[in-house]
Length: 258
Image (cartoon, rainbow, N blue to C red; front, side):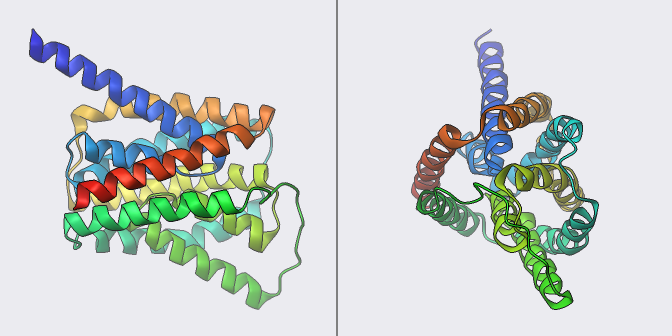
């Protein structure tokens, strides 16, 4: 009876963590891994197992957010193709590389990256407030795709906050406003990048299947609700909450790696 109660508490906790992580991610344009992946590690999963499980669950974020953003016609086909062609090879490479890292080093790097993202976000309060479209030369398009490849490697390996990196790059390099950049990130990174990473890691390692149903449910619901709120309300308050969660989770992971 006690074991059953403990299992129920774990399942409800997984749903709550997934709902919160993906709601914030859909609002802020990335960062589900900043909450969900550290939480899975802190709940006891080894890093490679937590990473593969998180990746697979995060695909549902892309499903929920895509349904909402397609209703708003937020995606640009040409830019979407660049994000996929530039990023997917990097995701595959990063997912194969991360399995070679010592687990403690992976947790340490994840903690440092998480804190760095929180600090960067705090230092850029007005980033992406309005659109400033740019006419890019072929060379500039190549640079844009190369950076997306590099972020893809990071997405496949350390995963934490890479959606936010994509959002920031789309704002800075391609001149998108924040809400349109978020739509591209959640749809293309959430569905295709995370799907590629999940398949690569699942093929090479393991997935915590018993934890997955509640994570998938929380991801789908959180992704849809977050995308709806992002379109309707804006992200100022959630941005502050997101930054705080970055710092808290990053510190927790640093302590765990010691």
